[in-house]
Length: 93
Image 1 (cartoon, one colour):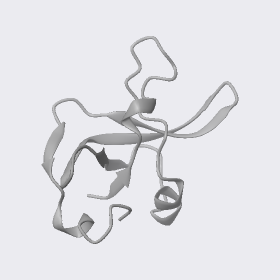
Image 2 (tube, rainbow, N blue to C red):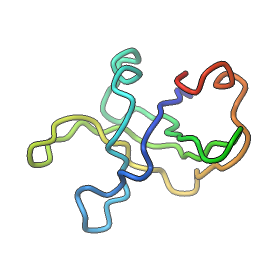
Image 3 (cartoon, helix red, strand yellow):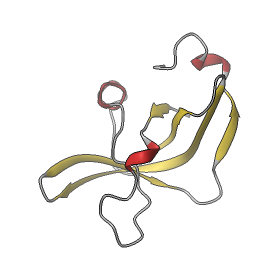
Image 4 (tube, helix red, strand yellow):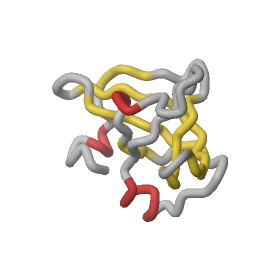
């Protein structure tokens, strides 16, 4: 599973119950390369040595002036816990 940083405070820009995450690590998405429908794990730092996140599906959208990727959370996949070992070297991994 690919891990992509996302800003969970920037959820729901489209309103109407949208829980998508719109502020995502653009460099990580370009390096993947991202594709519509791709499953990723979106995460952010929570407390020292703790992350929170979820599995999400990528969608490329145009929403007003915004054109880019959003991550639509998959229900029942929320995680809050220790930072996985592959992210310990730097939380930009």
